[in-house]
Image (cartoon, helix red, strand yellow):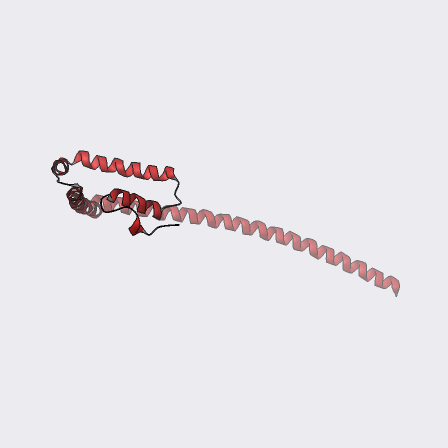
Length: 159
């Protein structure tokens, strides 16, 4: 039986609470995938800590886990804003717009080529099927004519 999320963990261990919430939300994910996810997140977090000296110094002087969590949240928020601004500048840059234009043109050309090839393939299939239909129709007409001749011959022989 599942327990409500509030009853799992306690206020003193937010990591346990978070981990148990994740396990309740994703119960069907195999453990290998979860360990890969946690490993990737841990690696990204470690890289962030190693590259940010100011954050390391502030975390070293933090009084308790709660203040350390606030410091980390504040740094992540500030760096997230910086990253979003840089990504926005990159997307709006002339070089990126040129590359997007080239990519769009390439996609349109590829689509046009695929459409032409598909149209040719459909036409070949139509031609082949119409040829087969014509030959089948000719055979059917011949069979009907021969059957009609035989029927006429039988009727003449009976009368």
